[in-house]
Length: 182
Image 1 (cartoon, rainbow, N blue to C red):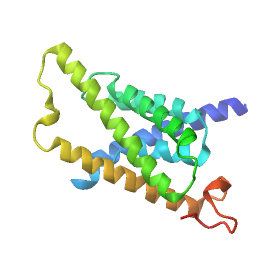
Image 2: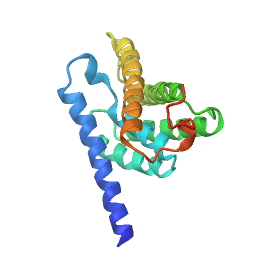
Image 3: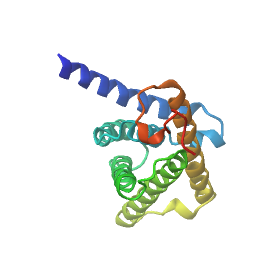
Image 4: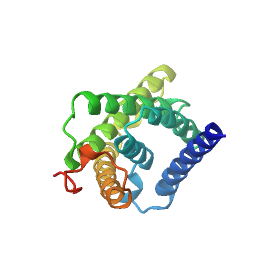
């Protein structure tokens, strides 16, 4: 019964992350609708729990996001999972100093990796299909930069809020007196 409860919680969390991402893109006004809530929440869950099970959650969220995507099937999924794996590796091997600043930098790097992989895959699909590559048309690069900054800031804000709400955070993010390390 315990395994069934874990599976149900896992599925509900994936549906919730997908729903929040779709609602943010659909309901928020112009600058705020560029926040990538899925990347931000998956990185937040990884930072707080530090479990590799978040990658499986990213696979499920990626599959659910593919239902609502207008790009070729699999691009969101691959971008989300590979960027989370890279950010996981970077967090474990390079960013060993755990502080609040690293949360912001992790959010920026995770979103940059997501957008870089996403744009590269879109480019390859457009070359294979002999269609126009729309990356350099209009303000798309400025919109990507806005998304990167907003998603990193959102992750930082979510993390600060979760520090105040959750009492089971890992101690390496907190000092001896249970305050945030800055």
